[in-house]
Length: 548
Image (cartoon, rainbow, N blue to C red; front, side, top):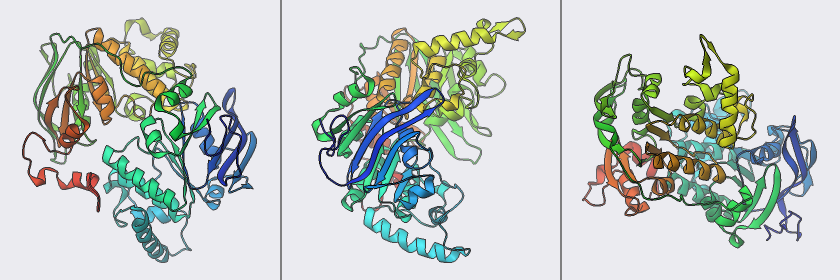
C-alpha cells in the first residue's frame, strides 16, 4: 500500500514534489524514545492524516516540525530544501503554521489583535490593525473563514475561535498548515464547516497535515494517511486504498471493535430520580429549566446535545459542586434517599460516600492535579478510604501499590506511578481518571465526554469498562457531544437544548438527523416555530451562506 508516492515503509516511489519530507527523525526524552527513525513524505497540495494511539509520538513529531523540539537525529526538508527549524519563528518563516488542540489566543483581545500579535508592523498598532482588517476580509471571502474582526475571543464559539487560529496562520503566509485534533471541541456542524474550509485551502494549493484519532474524519477528508505506533512509523497508505478497520488494526497492533459489543440492558430499580430540577446562575441566567428523568440499575442513560445547553451544570449539581452563587430547586433522589441541593451535605466528598462516581468533562481542570503524580491522583477524592490509611497517617506505599495495579489493569502508558499527570498523554490521563472512578464500584457513575481527545484503542477499552459496570447492575449517566458514542453506548437517549429535555429516543429507533433536530431545539414530531433556535445557538450552527 502506498501514500502519496510512499511505500509502506515510507520510501518515495516518484519524484512528485513534497511540501514536507522527514528523514530518519529520532527524539528521546530520557529513557523514553518518543520518535524512532521516522520517515514521512507529505505531497504538496494534499491533506495528509497522521494517526496513532495516545503516546504514539504524533504530537512530538509535529512539535519537531514546528520548532518546539530539536530532533536528536534526522533531516527535515521543506519544499525540497534541507532546513534547520530552531524555533517556531523559523517554522513560520518557512511557511509552516500550526493550530493546536488547546488554542493559543488571548481571551480579552479582539480577533484583529490576536491575528497581529507578534507580527506587528512597527510600534504603532493602527497601521497593523488596518492592514490585518483588509487581509482578513480577503481571507474570509476566499476560504469561508467568516468571523467578526472586532469581536473579543471570549465572546466567540469554540468553532469561531478555531477559525481565528487558522486566520493567524494564513496571515503569516503559511502554505503548510498543521492541525492537532481540530474537531475535539467542535459540534458536528462546526466540524463539517471546518472540512469545507480545509478543502478550500487544499484547492488553493495549501498543504494540510491533520493529526486526529477519529477514523471517520480520516476516511472523509484526507488523501493519504500515515500510522504511528509506539514512536515508529508503521505504514503510509492512500486513504482510498484502506478502511477504518485496517487503520485501527495498524494503530493498535491488533483487531479493534469499532462498535460497542453489548447485550440488551436488564434495568432494575431506579437508582437516580431527578424531578423538576432548575438552576439560575449568579448572573440570573436560567441554565436548567425543569429537568426530570430516572436512571435504573443496569442501564446507561445517554444525554446528547451541543455543549453549553445545561449538560455541564447538570453533572456538576449531581456531582455535588454546583456553580457558586447559583440558585437551585427541585429534587434529586439516590436509591430512594433525597440528596441536598445546597448546604454542607452538598459536596463532592459526600456524593462519593453516597455511591456516586464522577468522570468529569475536563480531565485536566476537574479530574486531575496536573503537577501531582499518578499515584497521588489515583487517591484524590478517596484518600480517606481505610485501605489508604494507617491510623492518623496516610499509607503512601499502599496508595502507590493500588495505583500501579490500576495502571496495569487500565493499560496506562508509561506505567510509571511516580510520573506527574501532565507528563502523560491526554488519553492516558483519561485512563487514570476512569480507573479511579470505575474501580470504586459506584452505584451511579456520572461521565462527561469520556473519550474526548482519546485514541481508538483507548476508546474501545473505556467503552468496555462502562458496559461492564452497567452489566454489574450499576447506573450510568453518559453525557457526550459524540452522537456515534451516544447511539452505540446508551440504552436510552435524552436530548438537551437550552436547559430543557427536548425528547427521549431508543438508540435502535433514533437517527442522527432526528437527534440533530432535537439538539437544535426542533422536535421533528411537531411543527416547531422558526424561532425555536435562540440567536446564541444560531451563531454557532447557522453561519452566513451555509446550513447546519
